[in-house]
Amino acid sequence: MELLRNLLRNSLSKPVTRLYPFEAREPFAGNRGMLEMNPENCSFCGVCAKRCPTNAITVIRKPTKTWSFQPHQCIVCGYCIEVCPKDSITMNKNHRGPTF
Amino acid sequence: MSRRTIIPFGPQHPVFPEPIQLRLVLEDEKVVEALPAIGYVHRGLEKLAEQKDFIQDVYLVERICGICSFMHSMNYCQGIETLMDITVPDRARFLRVIWAELHRMHSHLLFLGLLADSFGFENLFMQCMRCREDIIDVMEITAGNRILLTTCCIGGVRKDISAEMFSEVHNALDRVFKQLKDLHPAFADDYTVKKRLIGVGVLSMEKAVELGAVGPVAKASGLSMDLRQSGYAVYKELGFSPVTEKAGDCHARMMIRLRELDQSMDLIHKAINMLPEGPINVPVKGNPTGEVAARIEQPRGELLFFIKGNGTKNLERFRARTPTFANLPPLLHMLPGYQLADVPVIVISIDPCISCTER
Image (cartoon, rainbow over all chains, first blue to last red; front, side, top):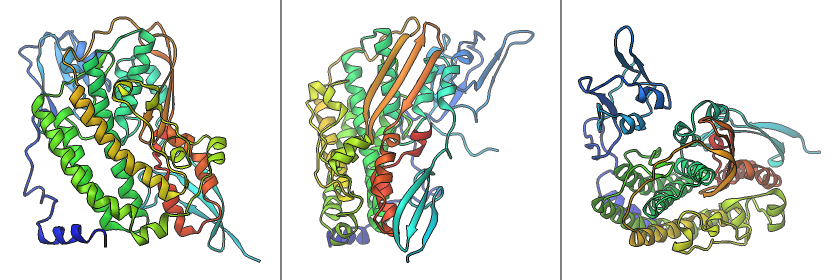
């Protein structure tokens, strides 16, 4: 009986759930979706790799400068973005699509 | 003469959010004894915490639990700040409390949904989950993610909340308040809900003290103990007194959490009104040395962290004693004497978070 008003309101309104993926909500502005890296600014200092809690980033300086990233290991915490001195890593608010 | 059978309740059961096994010794339909078996989600996080440095540990500690995660990181940060004598700016302390109380609200709404599901009231479960989505949207707007906020850092918080975000917070809390007006009578006054919850899983005050119950389980038995009374973060400035009930049954444990939902909403409104301007964090220099026992009031009770640093960037020891671990002995005391059909209700009424318990 207590939920009668709630029941009548729900039966006269449309469903609350969205029909994803046909209806998708735009992510909120500060959403932590995935990392993006701009290699032009990078100085290969390796601070991001040292700070990453899950060791998702690997930076090699010799013989060739390489910055590699394992997206499935990343927990999208944003610590690398905070410590990067050249601001070469940024956060994209959209999530990575399904991969295997 | 009645026969005794042993039924394994769990580790996979539709009513559990996480796996725990209770081997129930039954005489006909009545539970005589319950033997727990835990360890299904042990991940060795305490050992892993010793291998990562103390700043990376903030992110690790947050992932001990997927329901009360912000409280873990807040407690850890408070412990390290005590060890390293860091004074957190006022704005950061208020922001931490706002996020902590939002987390408490979402956790209690999850509990209410699961409790309704445990006695078969699926519609009420769905309504609680819908209400909870408003809170989770607010957390996503302010912190960037639904549950694992990663906003707490040593020395303060990493993100600020702007005025537009605060207006979203107020709108969401208004919507939640309206929905709770429908849900409250359904939980508190409905005839069938009362029949399933009143008098089930009674824990007396003496037994609650003897067995070391914490959180809403202790408060429902009449013990007025809540760590927010100690005044950590900004609870002294906000003014706080715990809610208690006397009956000690499942209905009392549910009423405690319903009333704490209203209390959390008031605390969030007060914190937003009193929020000062200023910096949101201070730089951290050096490494932690010494031992500290940091405590915080999680949605499920008292969370205790023992942190020992030895002057290096890795901690020597990190020990977490979570409230569900403390509430397991009272649970084993509550089960005997009740029917098998009451077991899911009693187990959910302590709000078990087994991933916290087993780390």
